[in-house]
Image 1 (cartoon, rainbow, N blue to C red):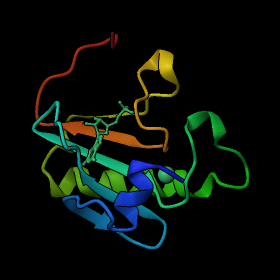
Image 2 (tube, rainbow, N blue to C red; image 1 turned 30 degrees about the vertical axis):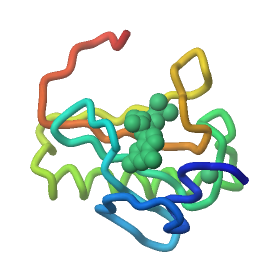
Image 3 (cartoon, rainbow, N blue to C red; image 1 turned 180 degrees about the horizontal axis):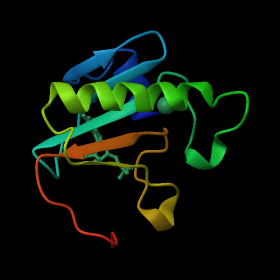
Length: 112
Ligand code: 5GP
Ligand code: ZN
């Protein structure tokens, strides 16, 4: 499958990894939009949040555990945002489920 994030998982494309275990990978976004901008992805290819189901959802809670841990490691646990864009209308540019962990600046709400 021609998927950038699967290639990052397989080390076919380099990335700056910050976390890795059997099911989850975390790495710095190539075009950060905040001082801390980490992408957290399941190693299993899931297209988007719209395809989370009872068979594949255990990795999602694990991703949020990793996010909490990384927020402390990167000193943003007092204010961070986790975002997943799902589908073209929401601006999902890479069709492999990913969670943006953003921190180190102020955020406004509602998001645009
Ligand atoms: P989306 O727009 O789908 O929510 O987020 C995709 C993110 O992946 C973007 O923030 C983009 O900068 C990042 N990205 C795209 N290609 C690469 C890459 O090859 N390496 C890394 N580290 N990030 C990437
Ligand atoms: Zn993939």
